Image 1 (cartoon, rainbow, N blue to C red):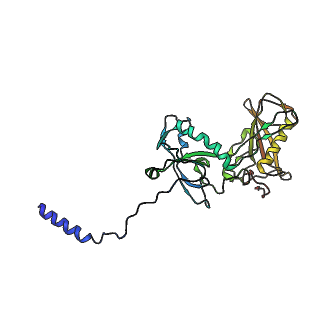
Image 2 (cartoon, one colour):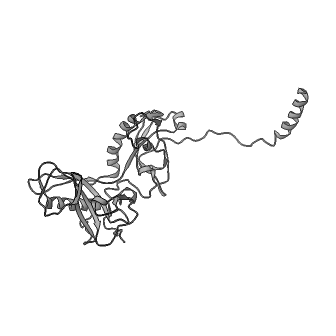
Image 3 (tube, rainbow, N blue to C red):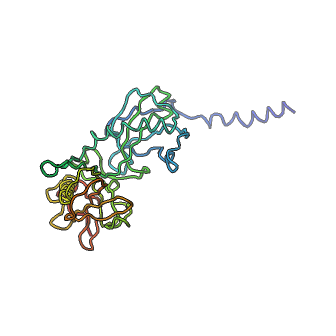
Length: 303
């Protein structure tokens, strides 16, 4: 019976050997090399769910994020701002160790995106006001894929991109000095009333955009000076000498403190020990339809 079975098996396989032969010569798969500064990231593993509430999940261990780079002509999820050639990142990493590796990325990104001059000097003898721009960048450190690791690659790279790897169009290189911020990175608000305002995507109609924040110390600064500083900073953020666009945009300072929020009256007197925001709002019943940051002399995105 074994002999008969072997004969039947051979009779089935041998006639098909020639038919199943595949022509060609085997070649090794091409493994991409390290990215370079300016490369566009078209897909990326997202480590940030590990830091959702309760945050951070310090005991989480996850695969070191990897990414694909490709064409900058279509939607992307980020751009490479710096590369460390011999960083040798671990294939798996704890949440706390990953946070420590992310810290330098924000510094590297400043050289890549450019910056908005943050300090506005008040009247003679008064302290300067330091405005922190409100742009919604997310920083991620990536490393070699498993195939790249097998070829001996040991680099790591910093990527600046969108929250939750949402695709965007446009470029972030020098965007704060010569470019127009893509809509996915502005801090746009659903209302001009500070108590009721939520952040919304900037490509949807919205009445206000948060341009910057500052914290006043114990030295009093006149409210009129704070308003003027907001207007100066807005001009820098929009990159224009007239951030009001001949009255189509209003600039207001909002005060947050002691669980309250209100618009600051420029005639209200001195202010101290407060957190303040500089907002651009659409005048009348108009809504913005895009971010104003870097708009320069382009058409006002309003409806």
